[in-house]
Each structure stands twice: as C-alpha cells, then as structure tokens.
Amino acid sequence: MARGINRLSARKVSTISDPGKYADGGGLNLQVSGSGSKSWISRFMLNGRARERGPYHTITFAGAGEAATECRRQLVQASGSEFY
Image (tube, rainbow, N blue to C red):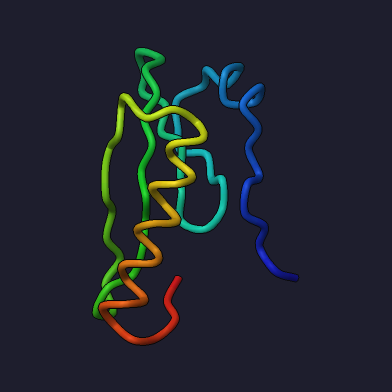
C-alpha cells in the first residue's frame, strides 16, 4: 500500500498538542516540542543518508507543503533520480 501525502489537515495541526513528530507524508513532519511549540521538518535521503531540513517555525501549514515539494524537486534535479 502506498503512503499518502497530505495526511494532516490544518484543523488536525491546530489541535495536536502531545509532543512528538507527526508525518504528513512526502518527508514532511510536524514536530511538537514539550512546551507545545510547533515547527515543520522536511526529512529526505541524500547519498544514502537520512537528512533533515528545518525546523521551520514561521511557515504556515500550506507553506510547509510547498517547501517540502521544492526540497524534493531540488533533490531530484541534483541527483537525477528518484528518492524518498
């Protein structure tokens, strides 16, 4: 079964308060700290290693999705192949 993208909704993001990482799909994660602050992290593979870009504290829900899409686009252009 394929993993979905855009698994989180704006409403869901606003109601999450438990600390942890919540996957939206496509390498985008919502990170909630112990104090309740939220930030976005884009996770990807590069040269066989897991990497993260972020955290992004000031990006909106829609902006985080756009940033993750742009990150994936840049990685495909740089490597010339698919990644996840």
